[in-house]
Image: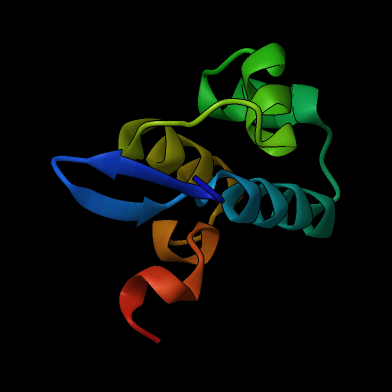
Length: 85
């Protein structure tokens, strides 16, 4: 399916690309490297890289770790479309 996944019969948009772009943009805005973000968040640089490329989905806990490391609310890293906006 185009950009969606199915869970229990519900179509869910694939937001990995949007999350990837938001994490990457916020990291760049803060002027820190993937290595520094990895250090601050307690994640590996390879994991940060795969999240930023959108090749892996991350749990809400992982996204929270990244948000804290970037000093932003988790909501800032999620696409507005999931909030019904």
